[in-house]
Amino acid sequence: MAETIKIINGKVLTSYRLLEEAVLLIKEGEITYIGNSELVESVDAEIIDARGQYVSPGFIDIHVHGGGGHDFMDGSTECFLQAAECHARYGTTAMNPTTLTSEREGLFKTLQLYEEANRLNTKGAKFLGMHLEGPYFAMSQRGAQHPKYIRNPDPSEYKEVVQRYGDSISRWSAAPELPGALDFAKYIREQGIRVALAHTDAIYEEVLPAMEAGYSLATHLYSGMSGVSRREAFRYAGVIESAFLLDEMDVEIIVDGIHLPASLLKLIYKIKGPDRIALITDAMRGAGMPPGESVLGNIKEGLKVIVEDGVAKLPDKSAFAGSVATTNLLIKNMIQLADVPIVEAVRMMSLTPARIMGVDGKKGSIAQGKDADIVFFNEDLQVSLTMIEGEIVHQSDPA
Image (tube, rainbow, N blue to C red; front, side, top):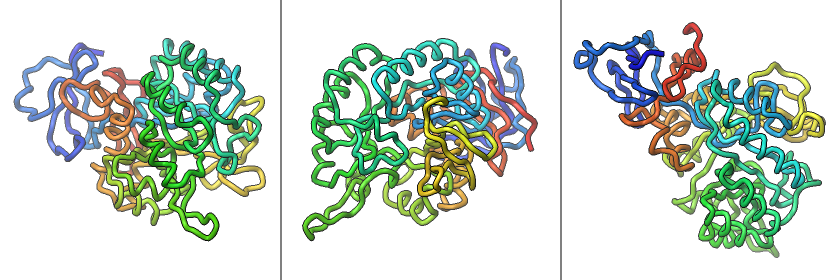
């Protein structure tokens, strides 16, 4: 690539508005100018013509398990690299690779491979650190997580994980009502790791101290968590209601059009707003692949599932077993199903997740001084170009 890149003829989406006739300048992987083309006509640069497409900040997926036929638990660096390249084709420029519940040694192996893959990843979505989903979950809310590996927080275990691989872990999801779950949260927050509520049967009275301990994000809202329940005839608000009541709590939602209906998407958007909602794929290996039989988790030991109707299901079709969505589809669904303006839909897929993960200083929006993570897409949200830190990692003819 040239030292300076000039992007012209695009509809530029900043975090809060659409600029019809703006031009972008990029130098050494960083956005250096956004504004009127007449002011930079004389700048010597390689020109990229957006040809009337949207020019958007790169999409940030903070909860994804795999894609392109690969899962991050497969046990190879290749699985990380191929999944990252797969999602980059759909506009993902940064991601948090996510685990499933597993035995201790399997988790250590995955974290070790992540570190190796992170050094080798030059063609796919940038890794922002691992997201450990489990194994500290409520058995009653395990979903497709393997019950064999679900357990209560063990200080000797999680302290060893953090001491060995803390620099590679960005977030950890757990059920806050479990014995020892508050001490767990306090410890990992002290190490700079974000804590999220997930696969939990907590009630409001348990969520409050959990939030004080550091649980600040609700993992895949509505999926694997409690709603209103009764205990000895008395009603209690669950995690879902707690997320709505607590303004400071961020939420992530799977917007594949299947996990949550349009009515719930509208409700979440109405209550939480675009600055507290991160769109996530929660995608397993079936993302970007044709329908048929697949495996959730490790390719050799994982759970057999069926991908059909745009989602992964358990073999008996009694429950969903993961999403096969890509980030561009999430934005399209928020616009079409929840009637969200495109600027806000993109913000929930870029700046909001960047802020949640603490990388909004360099990523998440088209702004001077930020990384040149750029996506071109058309009215149907089909992606034709993905640029990460000024390097094009995917390009195709606009549809």
